[in-house]
Amino acid sequence: MSVLLRVQDLSVNYGHIEAVKGITFHLNTGEITALVGANGAGKSTTLLALSGLLKPAHGRILFEDEDITGLAPHQIVSRGVVQVAEGRAILVTLTVSENLALGAYTRRDRAGIADSLEQVFHLFPRLKDRADQLAGNLSGGEQQMLAIGRALMAKPRLLLLDEPSMGLAPILVQEIFRTLVDINRSGLTVLLVEQNVRQALKIARHGYVIETGQIVLTDSGANLLHDPRVAEAYLGG
Amino acid sequence: MLSQQLLNALTLGSVYALFALGFTLVFGVLAVINLSHGAVFMVGSYAALFLVTRFEMPLWLALLAAMAVSGMLGLLIDVLILKPLRARNAPHLIPMIATIGVAITLSSSAQGIFGAEILRFPEGTIPAGEFIIGDVHVRAIEIGIVGIAFTLMAVLFLAIRRTQLGRALRAIAESPKAASLLGINVEGLFHGTSFVAAALGGAAGVLIGLDFNAITPLMGQPILHKGIAVIILGGMGDIRGALIAGMFLGFAEVMSKAYLSSQLGDAVAFGLLFLILLVRPSGMFGRVLERKA
Image (tube, rainbow over all chains, first blue to last red; front, side, top):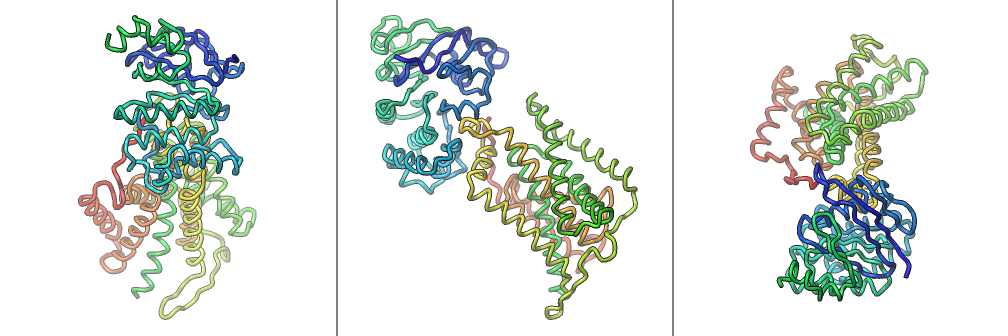
């Protein structure tokens, strides 16, 4: 099993707070890995550092054995590490089509971009129906589909997702997670950051539990799901 | 008489719109009210004058060169002054105050180099042709000014609406963070936007210099005030709004000078503006849109 991303002893400050305190983890190529924990545990901060939006205070990030620590966000995206940010990550003043077109900003292969657009519309047919509408007029679930679809337009090697379930009705969460499994089956490596621990661990091959900036548990997704410590802390006993 | 005034208003309005376009573009993309835009406009004017008088450059070439000079100046202001302030997360007022400093520096320098007196283009530089359509005297230079202003505005407008680069700029205008996660080089486009906006401002300076044939170190001041009014009226950061509001201000000014009082032109124009803002505080087309982090 080859390793796509390696995070070594990463510390990140958020404002004056040391939000991530020396975490080490790795993502295997082709797998879904979940990073779960409570609100404020340091999950989002970790993702912001992976995307270059926060500069690590310490540690290294290796993507395909290349050190990407401290690169600018656009340089990281052009290497194929693409993040679906938390909450309303889409551009509400642009149309659905324009959002998708911008997803392919780092690409120049017109034919490939057209193929990706076909795939995204196949995955999320509702986006095709609403292609010319302003993204701000979409429902919450549709906005999340657009955010994921837009990330896929970049033809990522690694997809980082920050709380894709946030603010969505349970049935939509199921739908989004099923889609993530489909996307992963097509070969894409996924890092899923979630507070919805049960759902995340159900679809993840590996999981890491983060508490107050430190990784406290790691195991396969299935084992973590049945681990009494996880059950007690995150799954309501 | 009326049609003659309409032509004057069209000429003046298109230059106001062109000036305001760069101003509003910088506000939209960089979220900075760049108060050096008037001084950059003045520098464009002097650059064209200098190239025409000193090197006998043809006017069209001097216009392009003046746009390049003012564009470089805009880029320099961004790299040397705005960028370090961005890096320190300076609050909004700071870059605005800093650009006032830039404006003062530039106009004092112009005064030092070229003197405070009004300078004019040498005889024969400005095409003297004139057409008579009905009872309207149309100067060739006016056709040139309106044509150039509208061409530049149309190119910018289409680029922003239809191209990937334009979409990227609109993405930054909404959220620099979201834009950077799409692989957009936000800093690079800040620089590019500063260049283009200043080049448009410089072009407006050359056109005004040609229209009135009068260039002074302080010519950027009144147009800066008008530019602020135009972008507020048009809705901050709104390209189409700046175009229409610029036209509106040109018409209001010319018409009140022609039919009410030549002294009160600005007072009437700004009074109207104030009234419109009372009714529509976010401008004619403004949507109230808070930028996300």
